[in-house]
Amino acid sequence: MSSEATRGRLVHAAGQTPVCPALHTLTDARALVNGKTVGASQAELYLVEIHPGGEGLEDSHPGCEHGFFVLSGEGEAYVEGEHFALRPDDSLFIPKGARHSVRPTGGQSLKMIVFMAPHRT
Image (cartoon, rainbow, N blue to C red; front, side, top):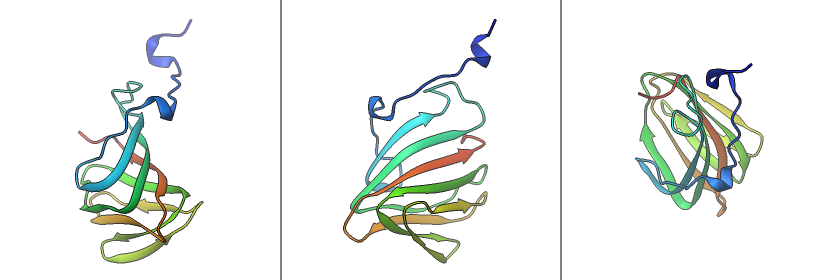
């Protein structure tokens, strides 16, 4: 028999209320995996859409690794001053504590899966 700790949990993105995260503009983020949605204790996973004119301002996460997987749209990111062009199917890894920012380019929204591990405290 499975206990609550070993049960899988399904989260449908459309059922999650979008929020605009701190240090972001014109951004919809839907929590898919975190402590509130599924009780995760080691990771966070979000569906994020940054709309034209929006951005994720420079930020860092000293206690966790971070990354993006681009689903649609194009954008650019900076990690510790290094420029990265983002296109669908690209994955960008951001080490613990690295200063980073991201924004859409090309007039379309930038839609990404964003992860953090371990979760932020």
